[in-house]
Length: 628
Image: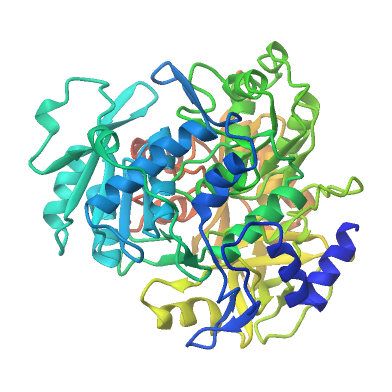
């Protein structure tokens, strides 16, 4: 069956389509109710089915005779460590940790917070929770205590699983002082604090009373079997915010999620069981959950846990070294990682050192990938770089290409076509569907397919107002988009990334595409800043490629001219400021709102997700210098 027919079936005969896909995974009790509604009349999948996702990830493959296959590769250039685990070895650790959690009184329906770095024990903790029906919430390791507090107060965990430290390039970041502070500030006491001692330094002074040693707990515990859970039982919570106000805990189901991930590994990523698949993401993000842990392991792929940075551990050839060393077939990362590599190695010299013959496809998501970066990738890597789009809320791709079908066609700058199950429309403000080539709001007709969010943890009203109230019967994505006559969709950015210049609605992402095509630009961000006369005007911040000899005055003139030529004088882009680096989240998204706030001279709160706070000072100094 080709991709078009697959999509057509998923929309025209949803229940039968997803019933067939559910047969691709093992259930303890196969569902009879394929599509139903919860108490709030929100659609849900496989309500009466029973299964366990840890069983699908680990035990199933052992039962099928693949216990000695490598399941996990840990590569940590920051600690100079490498380690592999077979499915048999992973099961031993996970089942004993699960037994340890059960011995502490944790049971199905309880919650646990996991606050750990990119190490195998983080994955083990996630699967150990899933094994006994405990709902996990992974918090990005190194987040400030406030971020832990809002999650603890919202999900009220019975246990907090942590490690002594993380590593940022060459700097040890102690976690225990952050945990101790969070416990002190939290409204509720956390009964069990389990700590994995990495022994990277003498850390006895960081220990505090009541800690449970991870390794001792595993050693003394009896292995626990997989607990049968309902398909709609929450597997995990993942918070999309929490810096101000009440956090938004996205709740994910078990059965629909497992079905969707198995489907996506086969049809979207086109990866075969037994191959090595690498999603270069932190466990704390949605990509880390779906495609560093659950997706590849359900599909019996070897997954890679990488502790390091793409350009500094030790150089910008690190990604290619890992792909070569472990014979990676398919990789997934953020465009910003490729842009960072391109900046350090513009001529692709480091790529030539490695054998990439096993490498088949590169997937990009997290933010839109500019054409200049795609061109660099095509020239120096030579495998397809496929942009696709999804959200924490969806849990798996909403737009993409079905690469199982050899006839798939890439359209550069597009995030692909709607994935099977996603009935996507482009609406105007009044809820009328727009013709091709008209920009509007990307919405999805309900029901969303399996794997999408169950709702917001303990807050249906907020779920309703955030996602379901804008257009009745549709999920509101919060993103703007344009669809062409062939069905390809181009994401123009969050709705607030569309600026209004003297009554003209203009997409900053379109301007970014133009700016990034300049031969001296490594990456850029265009934001709308306040203007008394026009309401808003665009402002470009750019990072130059290493070795570039162009002056700041020349690059500004070039950029103004290029935008004027491509969009016209109406764009009114008059400012282009060169910076050393752009502020980003730890997952690689550019913090455009922060740039806009700094340029407008307004008060701001340091985003909890920022990769390096020093960048704020750098940009502020540059703004002062630029405007002097």
